[in-house]
Length: 363
Image 1 (spheres, rainbow, N blue to C red):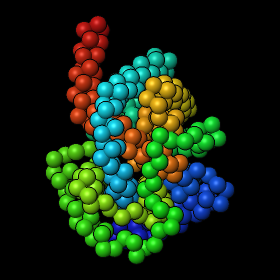
Image 2 (image 1 turned 90 degrees about the vertical axis):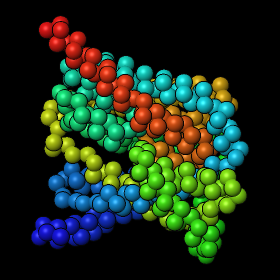
Image 3 (image 1 turned 180 degrees about the vertical axis):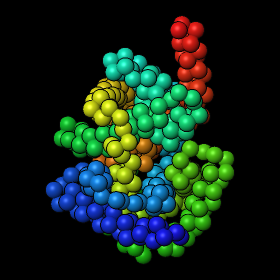
Image 4 (image 1 turned 135 degrees about the vertical axis):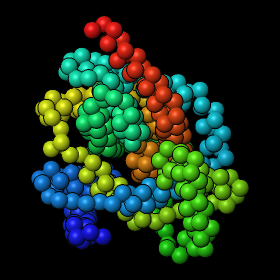
């Protein structure tokens, strides 16, 4: 550890205190998913005020493992059969959401005179790390635009999706099935000895997921491992609400530090662009959710979280809190995650090269 690194433990402790304070305040004033939203907003505000903060990505990864394990518990045989029957709808909804994002990026680039390929990569939902890597690969892409749009949309979604789905209009609905990922009557002794089987399996699943380069291995690995073991009759123990609350805080604090306004040029234009695109994307996904809820006879809360343009870990946390059908939400989000990881990048790469070549010929 270098001399500069000696300050990191103290900076981390300061960040932890700020995150906990935000979570406590959010809990006391009854904000939805308080430990996620409260910690994220508190760290975001503190960072914007110029405080030096630090949150290790390893802590975020641990939290994602906890969420992945919890999501995996919801994949029963009946749930998997239902998801398989939904595959055509899942595929179609994914195409519609991504197509909407492409059209939205085109309109925004025309109105703001920002580079269309950069806005396009910044507008693809649910693939922050993948889109940043893609932006680095393609020459002439403005990475500051990509980063700002991706992070801003993620923060907007994490703030407004809970407020929406916890509103009386949505939260009073009865889901098609109710899936709990934690029990209010939990006792810590209930974890043992069954959890001892799952810990090494989950660790191995992460190693395999990273080895074969699956997207977000700390999330996808535990989901698959827990679900597969469950299908063989070994159902993992549910986790205590305190542990799940801690995982919310660990994810929230990390997301709060992603936003760095000082590195962005044309701040007003970028802020306006980010808010407008995020809001339109949310409204578009909610409109599609209404249609999905009607056609497939599932609750609107479940369909809204299934199509929400956010990360699967955050949507899984919200789904658990409102007792939406977690397996359906995870099924839709997981399919889109794989689609964006494996299918979208080569298509975007070809399309953007085509645009640049066309502009070069026209100039």
